[in-house]
Picture 1 (cartoon, rainbow, N blue to C red):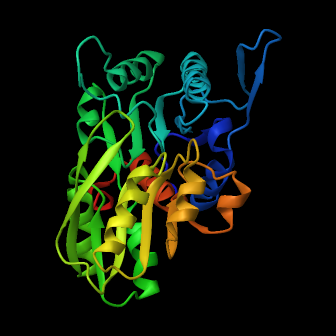
Picture 2 (cartoon, rainbow, N blue to C red; picture 1 turned 45 degrees about the vertical axis):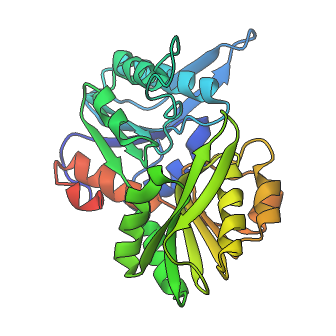
Length: 315
């Protein structure tokens, strides 16, 4: 049940319409009435058709490709809600775009993740809710409250039902060890790591496997699948080391360039993703399992609205 703290309203931009409807169904509230169109020159035109004065408003919008379009749409929706006198505005970003530009890896480059954080705050957001940031330190880029959820509970519930025998969780790179360790602990299985060396901005050279995968079923865990290069290279080396069936689970289905073809060639037993980014590729839908994070988001929104703790959902 929704509490009486102000009036809860949930809107979604064009990027997350389906997810927004699922979240509202979980909360038992009506989907916010919003019109998003274009002026003749392509500029975004937004109109909030519901009265939001004094309301506790949540805006669901992932900023995936076309990233700039979806981000600009989010900012305009937020500005529109602020000028319509919403009491509090929470930006719900299931996928936070530009997260990979989180530091100066070399000279004369931007930290775009911080820039986006500034833009969102300046637009008028009071709070941010997101899932599986590519880099955890991005939480510190925001000078407003941010709740960082993990899709792991949704994934682990499904994986336990699969009951995969002789399983080992593998991180495809050193940077993902923390996430992989969490999965291994909750599934009560061993952990292994793919040790690789990057030889260019778009190329990696896999070196060796830290841990035992010989004769075992493998679960590769990552926060996103972008070009699928890292996962396909990891799968090749894991098979060379004696791994049997290889499963993949990742939160964000970016799937750019020829990622779907690489995944097909890698012959994974199952690829498990979530709906933080909608999957429109008809070919990919045939072999990718999509789990919804709508219930997780809905429960978090309910708790935020009622000023209840959400820390138990972070694990």
